[in-house]
Length: 591
Image 1 (cartoon, rainbow, N blue to C red):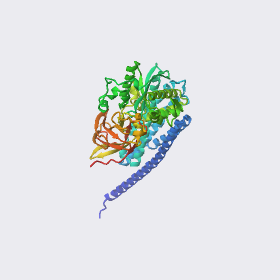
Image 2: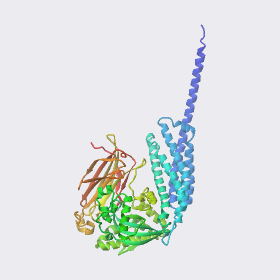
Image 3: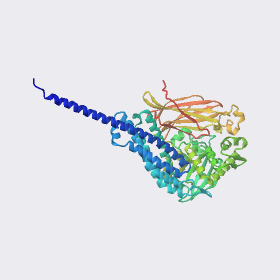
Image 4: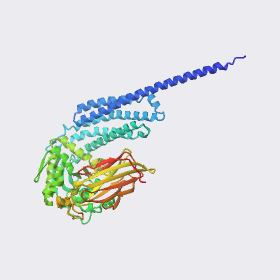
């Protein structure tokens, strides 16, 4: 029998294949173990980054810049370690594996973002913090040292650029391809980076804006409009007091006080945009008190300036509108103040100005005098505050709540302002944030909004394959049942504008995300008549609601199409005495 010489060859080939497969399997197991081990270590480093970042924020907030520098160094070490652990060739090779690879890519991206911020964003930010350290920032004889802001401009610009790039990079991470727990963590990262980017960008804008706006290049004049939230308007409240201030080389002085009675109704209204007229007719162009009904302060500011200039012949460089609740925050820095027969503290000033004064002083003319005196006293105290750190905190907190709005007649400054919350512009949607809004405007012709409250609920998702965002507003009149008899006639309106004393008539406008179209509107109680307008890129639906004491009404609008259905939907609303309760719920499609 002849031996087959091919058999040993096939046998040896099979053994070599088996050995090769075994080696490959072993290498893959080792590599997988390498990735798992390094992934666990990277996760630990990122947790330390989160903890140290919290400590860093606390150090900066307390003015401990030495401690902040130490925290920044530690944070950089942990972020760098996470980046190194997730950046080797083996890790990158495993990113091509279906499902698991997208999670590995996301972890690598997060680690690199954290390291970039730590290495390139924090150092200039700490340099800027040294320039605007509250220990150096002081108001002396009503004068602010503007050089501090100039020193901070360059490092803030550098930090703002790093954070903006980091935010854009975080937005590009494919969260939908990751496991839920990792996706949730990435969402939190995005929120933190976006918020930091916005804050630092705002600080940079402030460092650029403050010197010229406070008269570094020559005297400036500004109209200060004080809004009364007891009679709501889109941006806070009716204009109740108004003044002219002068800024020169950082020194701010009050030049002139005026009353709303100094601005009678115009026979020919000032020009207004079509959306404003669609929602409010021409009233904002005729009455000073109604100008703040205009939702976009980039439009309202010039109208307020025009009314002042036409009345007094004084050209102005800008307008600053603040609402009554700013006084509460400012008085935490100024301490108690006396005006007219009243002594106000941070604890009673809101109820005093928006409610008690009407019972104690029934004459509207005398009320106006007291409001004017209160505004002058508060502004003077703020301009000479002994604790600038507390003053800055009050202003920043008020701005975050939309209670401070600024318009500048200088185009370069206005272009910066409209990109910040201070500009009071309508929100613009982006990949990281979509917006819906609710605007409240009193139509009672009185001060009954001291007794009102709101709940705003949003729900997002898909209905019959269409992206949908639902906004529901519940509006309630919490006035006492005997309001007609127990409240002053000036507060109830005494039926002057056709509203029974104690009742509240309100215009409620709801707008959706950029480009989304209202598809279904539901309303109960009161007058359900509706108006529509396009505010920038936002479609708006406005209803008129009439409520007796104790009554409530609910308006619900569904928005569909482009921009709708996004999970990252934020609510923007009229600043009120009592902040509305904002909730989210699961979207339930109509049958």
